Image (cartoon, rainbow, N blue to C red; front, side, top):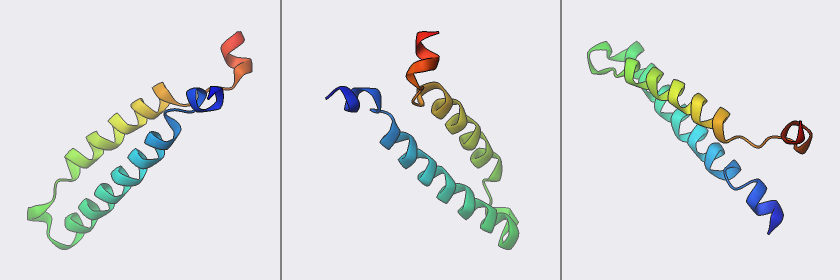
Length: 67
């Protein structure tokens, strides 16, 4: 139980990264093939928000927490 509580956001962070990568990849494809249908700006904003969330909720080693 203790390990689960330390790593409770790990699975969600990995899932979020996969979804955002898929959306960004699709929108890059749309930008190259059909520029008029692209939502690349929204994808870049989504990538930035994902980075912020992952950094905030990422697992920190115990040595950093105790300092």
